[in-house]
Image 1 (cartoon, helix red, strand yellow):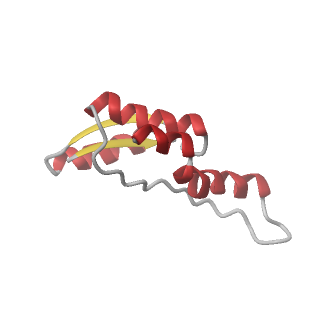
Image 2: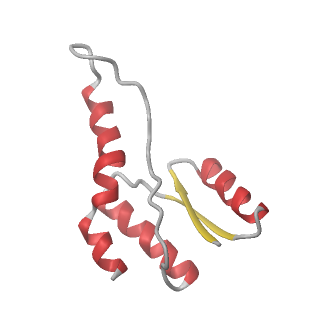
Length: 99
């Protein structure tokens, strides 16, 4: 097993990598914002650069930060959550680079 652990937080990415290594796998880490096209591309590049190819992709990115309820919702926080949880997995440019 080879894991590319990416997160907003280097400590969180390292925790994931440590768990993968403890289970007998290999792991690399990077601090990447998966809510942007550049971040999605960087995650794919990290995997290919680190391990040579991607055989199986598990896109498990997600954030949860309560943003309130209408009419008092924090729209900036809500849009940020959607950028990572909804748009991040669907970035076309990164998907093409997997082919």
